Image (spheres, rainbow, N blue to C red):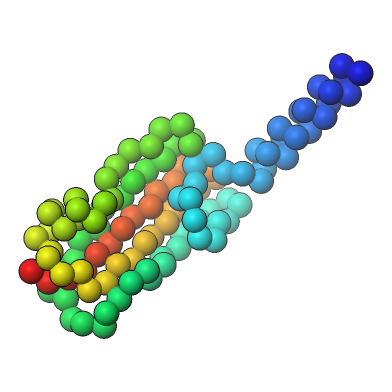
Length: 107
């Protein structure tokens, strides 16, 4: 009975390792070994004079750091009116992942 429980638990743990990434950008399509995507979230079609990018990072799903908030990006670039927003994701082997937010706009 105990051996069956241990075997089943080990099997489920191994399946979990191969189907769930430890470090993940959190959304969008994910590759089993490698992910690199760019997703256009918002756009007005207006020309923009400034562009700024900031990223958040995850290591093994244990450590996460960074600031990619709109407030941080707008203050860093002096953008007052956002005309375009894009998200870029990158992940490799569930070990490292990042999500970058890029905004474009005008003063």
